[in-house]
Image (cartoon, rainbow, N blue to C red; front, top):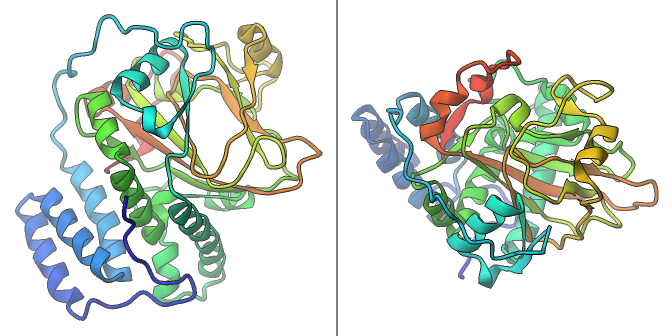
Length: 360
């Protein structure tokens, strides 16, 4: 599929010449409650000519749209019986050409994850990898107090997020996607071009929301520490409908940090604490016990995609012999009709409402 043309990384974004007029039109739409129309207007203008003002306003509109969102009172229908297309295959792997709703739903229902090869083309992969580098560099510039419009295009703190420890994330090679307006634009365009946006809508049966405090840009150093085993459902809740689309932008799993996964569907939250890296994480011993030998470390190529939800038990995989760093983007999407349930504290006392949904 044709990619939208983009300036070289060392070039400033072009001005539309009429960005202020376009912004006024979009703002009027938003004031009338037409957030989707406002977002589409700015998106079309930014495709034609990149402009940091449009990209930063898009983040604000996606956030405002979620704050004004009318939450569904009931969940869309969910199939009672899903055929197992991967019987006997604990960790299914397919080519992008074979990905459709039935395949995704089968893998998520029975195996708990799905590796799809070749989802994102090489041009987009290179662009997104460069975006991550520019976003991390811009974070450092902003932290030093020396910023300009181009820097803010790549890193602008998300005003609704009052809880994230940004310095700690940065020390681990990560920042939130929502805090890099230009990268967020490129990522949404990537989802549109590959059809992932339509697939997720079909999967949930409704337009998804993106979790602002979980979508993350990562450049993981090969000399770092292996991550701790965890299920995101330990703090997001087990009864919701979610989907994480993890896109590696580097060959990884052997020469660069990859992912370790328990290759089977779990329908419960594995015991947490007791030697784990956090109260909501799982200890290595408990993970091995639950896995019963079904531990996998896939080899990913740039542009692959790994699908899993909040019930999957996984961790970042790093070994001493690895020599390359790994770029990847993690995008958590949520079925809006389940977010109301997500806002209620669970039995362990966690209240995941601070995940901050935004319109995707």
